[in-house]
Length: 354
Image (cartoon, rainbow, N blue to C red; front, side, top):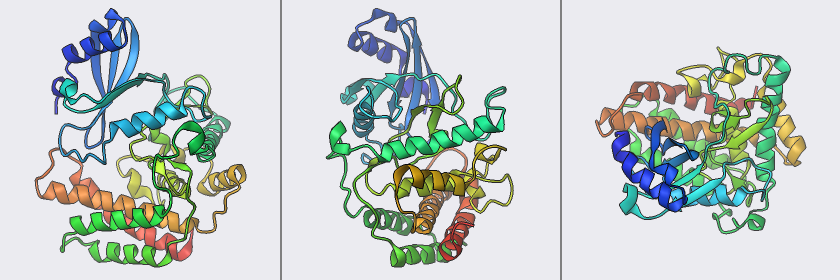
């Protein structure tokens, strides 16, 4: 994949100048912000301002996995003051594949920091500021789960009933399609899937679910530690069980640089949440319960399912890498993640969050 092929400057500049009604967009620069196996994100800069363009990857595109229209819809409906959830302002959606070869949308650039393993120098240096960031992350999630989908035009955004059953079936089928007989974690992953099916709770249905909720999918306010400026990457969002988001958040919420049962999710670098001052998993669970009033009696299951889901994703990446079906790196690292994720999932189902 090259930037020139995914977002040609001449094509994008002319399109934005026409659709946004400002000829200044004809002289612009385009920079790839995020790529790889997920949606491609580009920063477009001109004298008219800065916007972000999102489009599907150039190859291996599954229509249901990279639905730009859905992503544009949920951000648009939650924004413009319709909800307390911070999202970028959308500018346009293009369904005409003759422009870039795939649908895409454009939104305003939101200034701030996207953090994963470290904080920017001089930012949130005090423990109380880091605690405030942790609280803000869970507060935005509580706000999202408190939105009435119908009130913001998202009442038909998904099929909320049977969400957990469909999710477990989907990822079990994905694992069956990926499974290699010589995978050292195969039997344990099979056992985890079976255990999850046996113990699946009824679950809640109805709220908007982000699908990949974690601190790395947010923009933090650069001037006010403790404020989330925008929540990004809505490609897996739907209507369903809100505790699925809580489980995924906790998997990525590393508490210690070493010895954390879910350290495999951040194998390349420790999570920023392991830094001094960030609240621990139990603290953010308590805050979520207080903010929403939801019962978290079955939280262990959601942690086990999140572990299973990430293990299946990692196993799929590793299998395609071994088969030579994908270009790039990270396949060995993905293979090394599977076993620890499965072990962590089995452990939390047996012993709970400890």
